[in-house]
Length: 158
Image 1 (cartoon, one colour):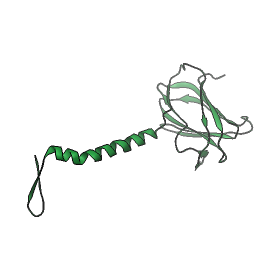
Image 2 (cartoon, one colour):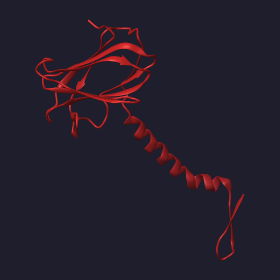
Image 3 (cartoon, rainbow, N blue to C red):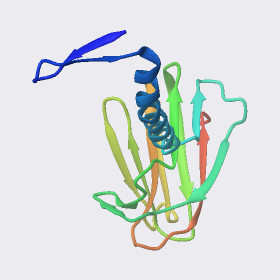
Image 4 (cartoon, one colour):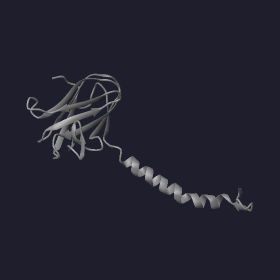
């Protein structure tokens, strides 16, 4: 039994089961809110190391979004999350769309923006050394239009 003192010095006794019945709706609502928040986290996280099971790894989706950034129009959520589990001496990301794609990669210590151009045949590509960490990859567009994209991830430097 729990005893609460109220200002008028009367004592109210509440049993544990009454307290639990009062708190149950709060606990249920809290659980539902946290479940909804967890669903917003990208479900497409891929763990990679220097030896990919399939090289290149291919991912598809829709480019662009409603968020105007210094790297074009992107989605408010990453297109892909890459978790590098060991340092990779060479890793290449290449994205193709029917539009003019941009590639924004936000890593543990740095941020890279790659814009497509005529020289790259309107593809955006980022390659080099990738240290251990999680990287959020946004496939953006130079315009507000959205296109289907193909993102390839490779450790081959050919």
